[in-house]
Amino acid sequence: MKNLTLLSFLVILLFSCKTHENENVAKIHGKVLSGNIQNVKFDWITSNALQDGSANKYIAKVDSEGFFSVEIPINNLSSGRILSGRYSHNIFFEPGDDFSIEIDADTIVYKGTGAEKNNFLYALEKEKLSDMDYYSISVRGKLTPEEFVNESESFKQKRLDFINSYLEQHKLNKEFVDYFKTKSVAIYENLIRSYPRKYSYFNKIPVDSLKLPDEYNRLNVISNIMDDKKVVTSIYLLNLRNLVYGKAHELMNTDSSLKWQSALETILFDSLSGKTREYVVAKWLNLSFGYDRYDTTIYNKFREIATDSIPIKAVEESLNKYNEKRSLIGKPLRPEFIQTAILDTSNTELTFGQMMEKYKGNVIYLDIWGLGCGPCRAAMPYSKKMKEKLKEYPVKFIYLTTDNTTRDGVWEMIYRATFSKEDQYSFKNGFNAKLLKYMGINYVPCYMIFDKEGNLMDFNADRPTRMVETTETPLEKTLKKLALKQE
Image 1 (spheres, rainbow, N blue to C red):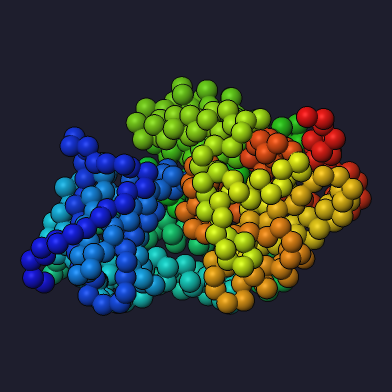
Image 2 (image 1 turned 90 degrees about the vertical axis):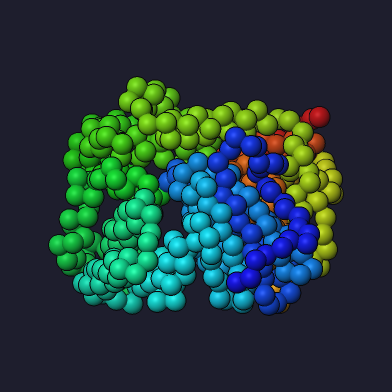
């Protein structure tokens, strides 16, 4: 590729207004050779396994001649995705990387310092051995559990063989090689552990009746998968977190005198050890803070055992965000809420603040959801029932989807899923919406409650459940109380 001379460029950095001179950065510049591409996105940039919920996004504006440039601040080996038009690829950075990218539709070529690991990932993708390909073998639960073990083992080995073969002709950073091999094993363990329930669901067979190969039982033992070297990948921490949850319930079943908190603490602090324990407990705390739950005992124990700076910093940041979000209760909306761009059912743009003004004088139960979310859709009949029960009160049920409603037919699917054509909106920028980014929400469903003046009263409200059909739920009581309150 010829030397790139940037005639003009504009870099839009979200989450980082500027790059300070003393920060470690990866410098990227390049050219888009085809298509009407206006920007190149670098999304979900994470520097450690605990950062998933706060991954960064950077956008490089493509100038009239196809050139773009961006600097991304990082301190460690960092992963993410690069998106150009409708194509996306995995991408990795290290401090000091300085490489160029040439993009032509779905073809991407990297050159310069740090290029080789990304050329490897692209080659992996072309061989259909990417992470996405790995996960696709479990889709729809078509394989029997035994077939799935064999297929997963084979896929894992193909990935390991591929990188070993690649290293015969190319140089790759040892840290990256170790990360890739570790992640390949962690994905395998996660897929094996989660497959029985998927197979049970799609084939309508009770999971307890399945005859599982020994590999399932082996990977259901914490000590068999615990390895401090794996803390570099988030899938390992998620896998262990889920295993801890299951083991705590097993412990309660064997000892009926144990309460949930005691069982959980026993597994977290007695069954885990070393860096794995620090990272898994940090993961647990981060998720708890994200769901507006403060576990004092686990937090205090974490402070006693933690020595690694990464989980310590992650928990500190999560706690600060928890306190920041708690401070919003009963207060007027933050600018991040007010300025969030949304679309109405005619795909006309307005702000969240403008929408809220329309409903002033009503209590708002906000349902943030998506068409592809099973729990979101499962709650809709109960939402409809609750709305009917509260129809005499100044309560509005607002549905705000993360789906791209500019695509043909999406609104009709939304109407069918929610049983209503009223009070429907979508986030213009999906999960990149200002409100969601500020609140650290990267999941659905999520429910919020606002009082008649538009003040935020609950950012982690209860979801509608089957109980609404037979009793007055705590959620209904809360909405009624706010509706009857005299301002």
